[in-house]
Length: 77
Image (cartoon, one colour):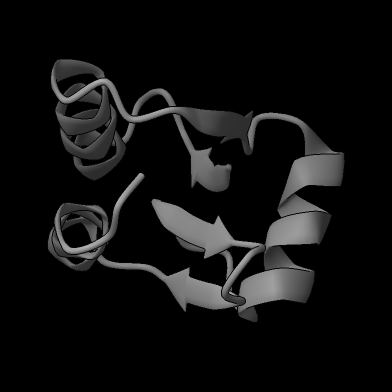
């Protein structure tokens, strides 16, 4: 399952989460309001920016909302 790092106030995060929900894409929502999650985000991606997708199966890491949506469209989730 993919991890999606988000901030509830971020409109780009809301866009990705809405797409995931409308298309029944299962994911782990990781809120960066928790400082431990920010540290994990920085370790995985290198910058404090959301949304951030991490696919542990393939080790893919993406930041931009449109790139994240395109990624899941082109993968069998």
